[in-house]
Length: 364
Ligand SMILES: [Mn+2]
Image 1: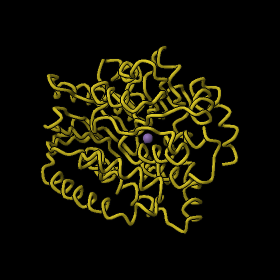
Image 2: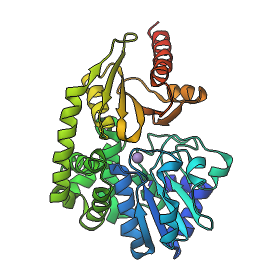
Image 3: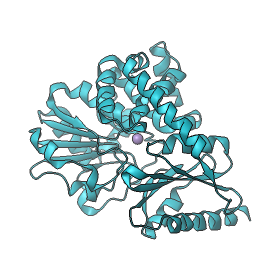
Image 4: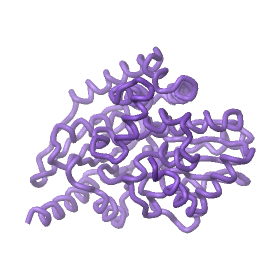
């Protein structure tokens, strides 16, 4: 933690981050917050709510499960009367979402996903990872905000929650584990409490309920992580999500392994349990790269979720992007979106070909 102020000065070297500090955090702009629907996105939104208070004139998530232009609702942003739009942790392609921003609004993207940056996006993107800084240093968007805000002590519970939500079991080997442990200890809580709180919040998007997400932001901002643990609405959401997860396991279809070290499953189910099921498969097969092709009929989309707890995946992500696939992700996980009209089996084939080729090279 002692290096935070020096690191912050490196965030300051990113023009969009410097302008965000001066123009959004310090001055009286009216802000609309658009945030990712997962625990890190929700915690990031709650941080801004605590810090900016009534200067936030509107807040929502993009359409749950959709990464891109069609997930945004420019009219709603316009109606709010905001002069500034802040997008938190969304992970979609900056040039695509920036094209949807209503005219006259200053837009900032604060994120830590390894997204591609166009020249136009650079002046809007406060994203150290996309600009080549290490993902290990920026495990969550809450951590980016923490440094931008100059490490204030009254948001550390939210910062820790974002880290726990995004890293999952990878937290144990992260340099940020000490920070999280210290925060939990100060609050007289355990790491498991934070894991549970992230899980409760993530239940909202698993049951595709954006009202639940808005509600979670309020609970977090006002009552903190402890408030989430005791909240009846979120506990109910968690129980519904658990029923979806159960039916997902019933329907999982395991495919033949394309090569040693790569395992594939298919699933068709109308709920966003992709990452939940994908993570648990990766935990069950820690020495493998796991692929989960999850078709969501109501969204007309198939997500190919790829995760490994042993092999870094960033280079595959970049290769697949070069091949023209729609890929978003990070070091240990990425998702390829296969939209209506695309041949998803062909997409799956491209992914496994690359993975198997590289893994066999490594094994030699
Ligand atoms: Mn995140």
